Length: 559
Ligand SMILES: [Zn+2]
Image (cartoon, rainbow, N blue to C red; front, side, top):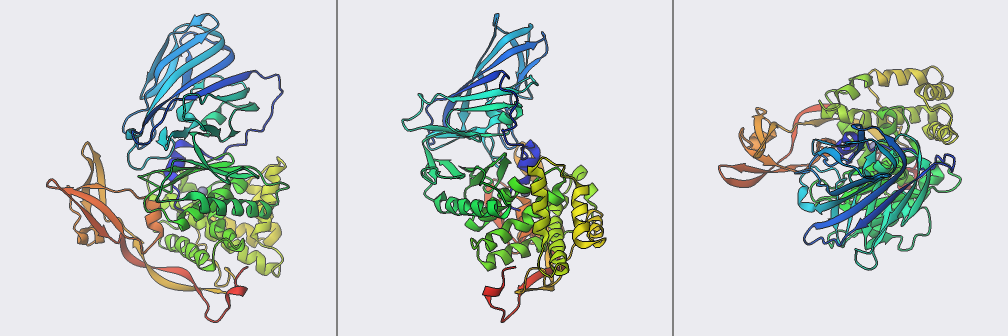
């Protein structure tokens, strides 16, 4: 998957429950006011003023009062917070703390009654550098966007609150609008956790919209004009796919879904998935095909994700990311085949392909090969199950029916557990179902049958060169310095040397997926900077791909 999975893992911006778990309407109402000042893309500077009023607070002297995320990976320096002023029923409250390393403030006295927290966040696009997850405050066009966790302080309160979000756009250009994960303009949300503010996206300015006038469940917003990329056709496509997927997963009515787009010069095509919305970034090198795969993948999550684990959530999202758009006649056959073979190439060349599922999460930061395994193995597991269920039922049932059963249970508020899933497998396949599951979890090879991807494709075994970066780096104050080069590697042959300072922007996961993709790094050596391009691939190993069977017409391929 092209998505920057680090961004999501690091910030745990996972899918969260939609903000509709209404509590009694007697819950107190928290008031949030967001007042952006003038913004300019040309200077990359601006400012947002925020004030938050939390009613009925009772916090002891010296206890934590509120916190704010001021740093995200890839920022040069923490987000400054200025003009912080805190009041309660008795007047001004002196607060302490709020250092960049511990952005948490405590009160010097007991705090009671309405707690009012007011502050400004100066925005400076120059705080960004490479590999940035797209959650910091950033200016595009005459507006800004950010995640809730970097915009709004989290008060140390645990009870549910109703939430009123109010935009004051008087400081922005005429025509500016404010939107968030929760909807357009000012909104009042039913009682719920404060966490939902953190797990959300905010955007204000003169917005571009697709559709231009919101007519249905899907909408997309972005700021500024980028002559190199017009998001409109892609967003129209995404809206059509969302409607199709909503029917596929048997919604009674299509649920709302919003895409926030923003420019990312460093690590485009990364994204952050949130409740019923998604922030996707575009920039140099991003292809329409890559973004389509990413969007289909993320939208699948909004229906199917639950607490079972990545083997389930990522497995079915990768299984469906090209299959559903193809079935919806929104992507051609060839793009489905290409995506399938990229997934297969990375899985069958993975040197850790037999790692049990239980070893993946504890070692997440240690190995990219482990990080990607639940995506690829999970996808092949769903394909194996799909093939078996189709054959056993004479084509009447497929793995889709099982996934839909899980989606239905989640909708009805019934438990959605691994035991439930295994029960569905047993119903569909007898003892073989749980056996395939046990094998996958233990690290067994998931190999779909030759004809499991329909009548037009057959499996072939071919050697594929395994991903090998060929050098490793250590961070220093000069940047990334090469500290070792693999003997005989393509990197060594291309001239990468120990001591080189290297800069690059790529996601390793993306490079690992495509055996033909070359890598260009900028190398600084002896005061000179120059590019080195090579194919980051090592030894060839036996792998599987699916090829077209000659003579079978396209019209019979859909399965
Ligand atoms: Zn995913």
